Each structure stands twice: as structure tokens, then as C-alpha cells.
Length: 250
Image (cartoon, rainbow, N blue to C red; front, side, top):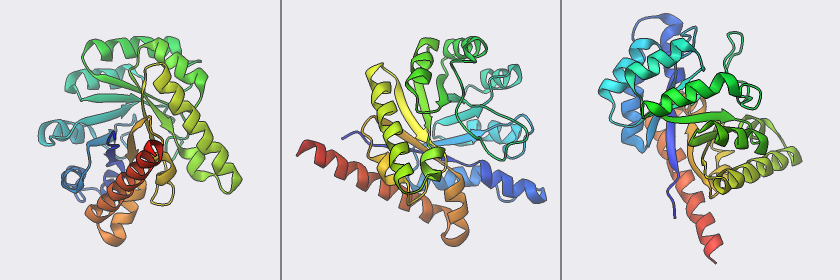
């Protein structure tokens, strides 16, 4: 059974810090808690407007945290220069608009391939693992493969937001996309909006190798602590993955 990795996004610890200024709560302390609670990696999105994670946070994450750092970033010259300077383990290219509250969907890599291609090439050349955050679409997956990105992260927001029969439709899209990703040789991750209630069916998809979860866990930390929230998510993922593996072997 392939262990499903858990990446913890610490952006919104920084959001709370920035609401008042100062240094508390410290997102790097949150990254240390995540490591102790069973996380396999840390994700941080350095936005153009620096609304949560700041440049100094990236410096400290690279210097002080042993877990792999996944730097989420827009495909701009500024962010490319920062990535090449700090050399995180991975960079996930995401769409970004100043007016959005959070990332609203996946990159349209089919429409933006000319812009994305040189960024993917330069990150690959620097030995940084490139991921593209996309919708669960065979067209987007095929273009991601053509661009030379070894990893894709499927946007799970539509699945998490859907209710009733519509959620089953969105889950099928994720299942089909993850299967196609494996078929064409892409490592498949997933994330956005996942919670205790929605993570199970996604964790059961055998060709998804990693989930990235942040906002929900930071919110749960208010009521029961970050350590407990991450451990509960880790346990749910492990249980579902084990059960799904057993069903496939039966």
C-alpha cells in the first residue's frame, strides 16, 4: 500500500498574524507542530500582495524546517526569481488574482502554455520539482504533461462545495483525472477545501499520492489545537487508504 502523503498549508496562520501585525502566531512554529503531528511536507503560498505569507517566512521555512517545502506561486518573473534564489523542494504554479479571497480554480494550462512553458523549464533546470494546480480535466492533464511538469495537483474545490448527487459527479471527475494522470506518467496530488467530512473519498483514490490541506485545519485548531487537528486528518487518511487497499486486494 502506498502511503498517502499529507502536506500542511500554513498560509492562514500568517493571515491571523497579519490581521494585527507583529509576530504572533508564528507560521514557522505551526510548521514545526505539523512536522511533529505527522505531516510529510509544508506548503506556503507567497502571493504578489503578501496578504499572508511574507518573504521572511520563506527564508525561515527553508532555513529552519526539515520537511520538504512546497512553494505555491504565480508564474511571474518576481516569483520565479524568489524560487530560484531559495530552491524549495517543489513549486506549485497556481492562478492568482488580487481580488480573490482564495484560489478560485485551477490554472488553464491549455490557454496559458506559452507563459507557463519557460517558467516550468527554468524550475526544472534548477532541480525544483514543478507541480501545476489544475482542474480535473484530461485536456489540462495532457497539456501539463507536454509542458514537462512531473506533478499535477487537482483542484478539489468543486467537489467539496457540491452537495448531494452533484458531489458524486465531482468525485467521479477527480477519480477519472487521477487515473488518467497515472496513465500518462504524472504524479497526482489534490487539494483545496478538504475537511474531515470530505477527505475520505479523495484519500481512497489510489493514484493520488499527496493531499495538501490548510485552511480547514487552521480553523479546527481554534477549537482543539493544530496538533490534534492534523493527527485526526492523518488518521482519517491512513484509515481510508488502508480500507481501500484491502478492498482492491480482495
